[in-house]
Length: 229
Image (cartoon, rainbow, N blue to C red; front, side):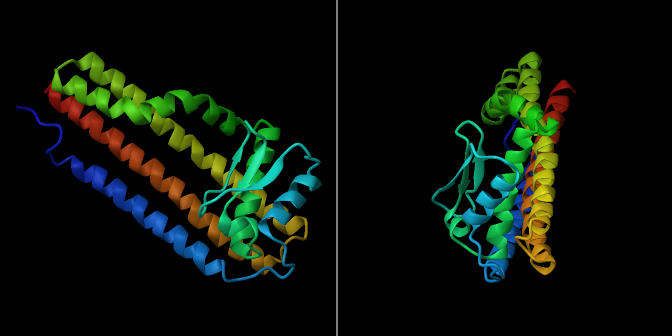
């Protein structure tokens, strides 16, 4: 009997998991390293975020504290830039880079940055596909119903597309952040280079997530084609 759970294609999933683990460990280590380097101006992450918003004439977005470590995010639904414990009150170059990055997302939202609009449009189907796509494929394979398998693959493909389109969104937010930190005099060039390393390590986590998703999709396609044969 054909078995979905016990075959060599699991190595693709393991490779994806390993890539993600390495990327996560790298960003944590990089953030920790540059969290020990304080900025010369002694501005906190919250102060830098507020300064960037004001310099861009944005007064309808709040900067708030959110619990956790590296749980920073901008929520356009509430109009809040949420900064984590390690960023909100910190004066480190790592914290300021992250705070500026989230403001980069605010500017993307305000300027209707196209990749961000595409990513937002994918959210509903991507959430559904990431949760249930694989299980729909499993059901299709288990009952030898190729149309169901194909539906599952398309659902999971939406989740993969979301991960891929996230890359330019995150890279652009970091590019904006680093430019604003230096152009607005919030950091010196040496400090900006340190923040670039932090944001670069963070970007690799999104690359890893996209790679893991692509590998999982490749596995599903291999399993479907094997069933056809």
